Image (cartoon, rainbow, N blue to C red; front, side):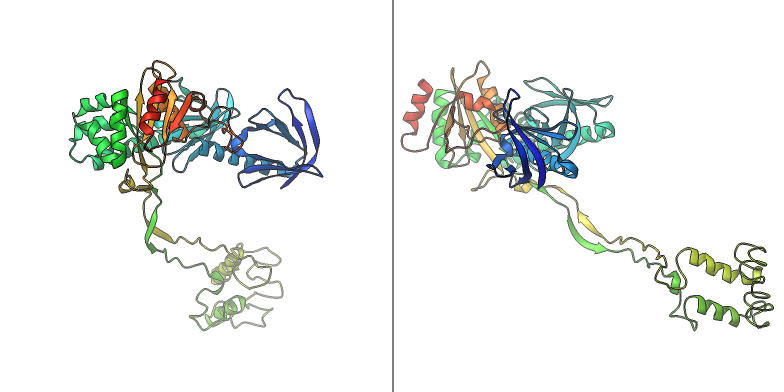
Length: 498
């Protein structure tokens, strides 16, 4: 939570309220609590943008045009901005119905700084405006030319990304790899679904049925005469096949498959191994293996017993004892006060004392509270891992919670019908055809929405409002829905005739 000065601005920039408040991010919402005022709670799905409008001032633009301006945040500004941008990006990913975990990059698009996320099924570009979702099913090519990434997309203008810096190559490789993996999963799923299809025909069918693309039945039958009928037979619920047959009598039917759940498995450990490196113990090196105590006293005793020059000379501080002649004689530090014969030794016979002081310089020796401790070698314990990868066996269109959604789109002169093959609950959705390629337009909008039902035009107080970035096409063209009951045929015919 951060204390801030806030202002509420109308879409025209007029301030309607200001004061001091607490601001925080909690439970997927931006919460502003004014001192003595009413709390403002905004789901991040209703936030159009989060940006630093000017130095030390944050601007939170809401979907309906209101702007919340936050200033005087102090040291909490950076943290609050980061939390809000992360939550805003997560909400955009949820709205876009992306699959899997994202690789995250930062760059520029159309002159604006954006966050770029690469998921299992789509590229998501999140900037000041509405998030841009680029489904892999519609990507034609990815090029990296002099640090400029161009993503060519079927049916729309290319997406140009710049200023990724030294991560340009990494991003291009990550995007190309994810696109390749998505198409590999489609091929593997079709291979498991249709084991009798020969490899070249399978390759051609997988190229047509890219993740979420609806392909006309006639085109599929051009690959193999029985391909469209077999796909409906193996992917549709028994009670849904009759409905598809009836749709085919009224309209041209296209069949599609869409992965809706990630099948990515994280790496798993098998058996650990460890580098049995010994931690440094110079201070008590061999202390437990010998007869002399570790440290300075042990060094002196060892030197005396070794019979070094002057070991049994006159008194400890006179003559040729361990410290040489006289209190400040020629000893470990040379003649007199620092003159002599080398930085550590008096002569060759006292090299052991030179070694000792060298060890002390490394942090070993006499143990005092202020003594510097040597840094231990890092723990290099590792586990041999099963690498991360896709569990292709989890791709299935069967069961109550399939990972692959089978669907058909049926188009007439002025209507497009959307029908789910392998789930019982969703009703049949009917849309107004937007033009000559009505089926393709509805198909793309459905993919970008994650096949979620549209919000009826005008909305309702009991239904959630349309989230920022949600395709408007589905809502604007929505005609009605038909439940799968005994009146399904009659109600569908009425909507198609309208």
